[in-house]
Image (cartoon, rainbow, N blue to C red; front, side):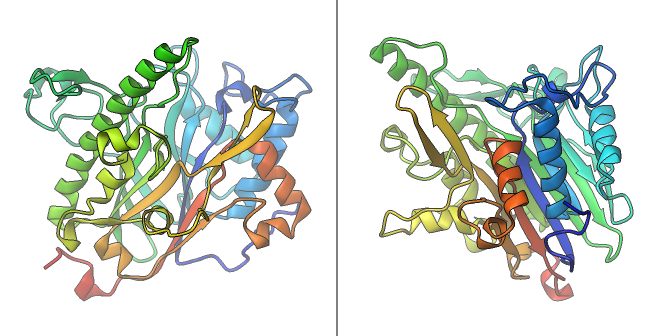
Length: 366
């Protein structure tokens, strides 16, 4: 596929979130691409095939900034920044600068890959650092959040294995300042469980932790919303309205908590794909991820990836898009892109095109 993007006329500002399944496995310890015929972590797909597919997808998106979920690892031997910038250089991407925040406990990081000719970006975490955080405060995301998970009046320690990435970003063409929070929330899957009772117990425990993480994120978002910041919260929430049978037990999904649907309009966030599911009367729903169930020998789909925006950003009528190769007609019509999206990851990118914000709407909400 040529370097010409799928959309040759770039939006005023295009941002994306993309969960790349085991991106880390495509690089050696020096951050060099492993473009060979060895198997990737993707089923029956080589590392060269997955890398080529990713190059096609990133080129087609033509985004100014991409929040990458499951980015390559940072450790004593490896560097997220080095790997991603080598990837960008190899495929001649505009998004050639990588920003990484707090290091994950896993081999999956959150990183922001951006075009430095269009965007300036810094890691700008808020909240008190772990050593100084008050138990009832909203701490920095590498700290501990206290929440009563099982309603026994004894708060438990909540932490992120993959701390959210907080970005202070400026669009250098317009001077517009944005706040971005990249998210990879707790998975609710009952990994390692075998007996039905054990599956249920672990699934409920994981859902509690996932909801507590969303409460923590929501508290941080409310700080920005109250200040009138233009905010985007984006990434893989491992959750969505109506996604599993345990939602009734807890009353709300994590995404509903993040949207703040019970609050005043200026304190709410908007995400049209989530709102479609919340308001649906039919079984039709958008999806952003596709997984294979080996037991049932069947694929299933879910809406896990979101870009939530503050009401002052929503006022500019942004355009959201899930790059689903089987649901998006423009992706479907280009066979090379369609196959690349299916090969690159088990998630599909979500993009948002932001337009100019009128000055009278860009400040603190009334």
